[in-house]
Length: 322
Image (tube, rainbow, N blue to C red; front, side, top):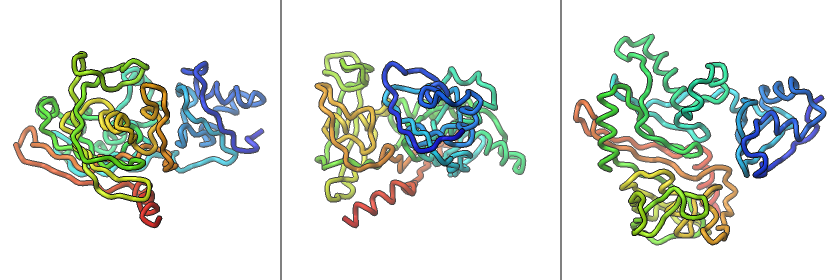
């Protein structure tokens, strides 16, 4: 027995934490557990418009689950990651959208067979360096050390350290806010060029990260915003980070009434108002376009630019035609 037609399902709060296999069984009770696992392995199930191959993956409230009549094989094997710089101390890569930067600590004890169902950028780059190191004796393989993260749906440039010394050196640069990081974000409507400075807290009062009065304990967050290109009903903005707090750009733009297109978390204001989008973009329209820092060992000034990924570029071209 197969899936006769596509089925869409939004996870309710009461199913938070259930496995993907359980959700599919709830929707298709006539299917056996073995059949469900086979359908998942064949690419019949999407979570938030992305194929998921892990039947034990825990779902979250408001996630979109789609059961496909025909399998989608696009994401069965993650693409090769573009490496922009590699030496014995660090590696700079181009992160595609739809892949987590690093694995959650609780997942690090998983068997390799399960990890391979949902590889992270850290996993993919480690394997790629291992392959390169077999051909190049100077490129030794070692575990990557995390000094920076990008959200799963965000694309762009990211650096990993490969030695403890490089980890300390890069860590100090991020701590001192001397790393150059510039992002491109598409927002509905427009926004005035400005510097946004707030105090970010884990819970602004409604269970979400957000800004709080300056008198309240938290972390200072500063984002410099400028206009890159205007469209009918939308604006492409450049965001330069002075600090690098969790979800900083997403929070700052949303709190100004201009959430990033494709935003699913910071779309509701503290008073419950849902901010409009209208783009139809299935993921965050956010891209880490520039990265620059001083090499922690050699002292060399290093800087990279990365073009927009295909889906983001296509969206902008469609807006230009309008």
